[in-house]
Length: 73
Image (tube, rainbow, N blue to C red; front, side, top):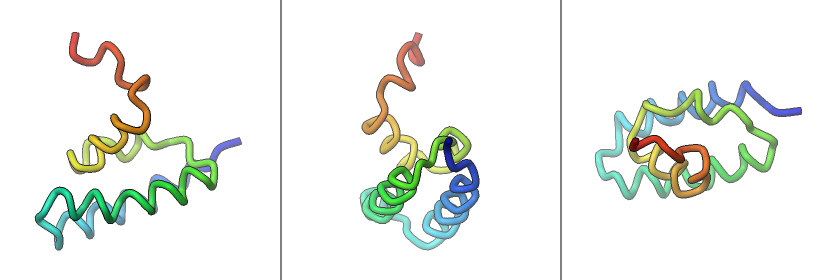
């Protein structure tokens, strides 16, 4: 069973980080360990956090490329 409420946590993190950190790579370095711990905790609704920050979206594409197959078609 997954952990859907983690999306609310991640969305808040994205909103605050994006507001205060303009550098894309820096945002990704902040998001990465948070994503790690949330996914280790069985986070399974990552798609609810997509579209808030391209830096986050690109990390998800790197981690789970099969979720995005056929997207460019």
